[in-house]
Image (cartoon, rainbow, N blue to C red; front, side, top):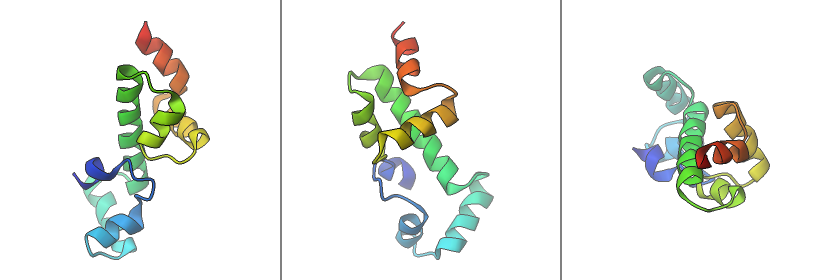
Length: 99
């Protein structure tokens, strides 16, 4: 729930999350992986890209705007993450969604 509420914050990371729950970074990281089955950064990336897919399909916002809305400060980083998660670029995904 914490990630769902904060994924759009570009500062969201292990340190911010661990601090929120009053845990050390290393313990939080280990605890997260043991309970979620993946690293915090991989989980966060999937949440952000999933939200970006929703926005690409349901809004007329451009890719730059959407990348900021889901917590990326750089559209190049967003595009790389999107392709890593989905297998295609955000622009191709948007085109396929519009058909």
